[in-house]
Length: 196
Image (cartoon, rainbow, N blue to C red; front, side, top):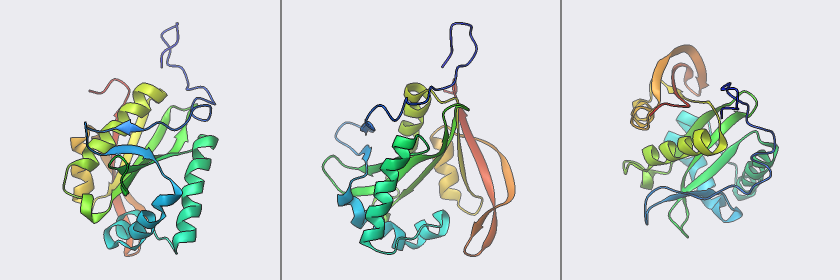
């Protein structure tokens, strides 16, 4: 966002909280990004049991009740303007994955983009589409200035998603992520307002 003086403006507080979380289509007739619902608790539980999601996201879910509590917290984070999390799903279908913004800083104009997909959705290109679409919404509609996407250097699939979605590699942060098998270096990718 640019004000009349040409100086970048901050995103005003309330910009997220005063509107409902939108549904963001990916492709005609294909998956969409939609808010999580309590009916998605089974998908969240399945994600917490998937070895790849657990490894790269340090993500576990203890049961359906915990999954429903996590979904409720997703909605609380939207209202608090600290996070924005969508389910990747076919229209009227179950959640196939998650894409979201963590560490939303409206005043600072930044957030971290995160995502994962259940096994049945991997390899279809939907991760790239979801990351690209959420990035467009965050930069163009919400008005953030910078998005970062970080992943372990031992996870080349996430590196490919970041690059294909237009997030340039900025560098490697040494020993920045603690996983079950120890500390990992992480790649820092970013997309800023005006990147095409």
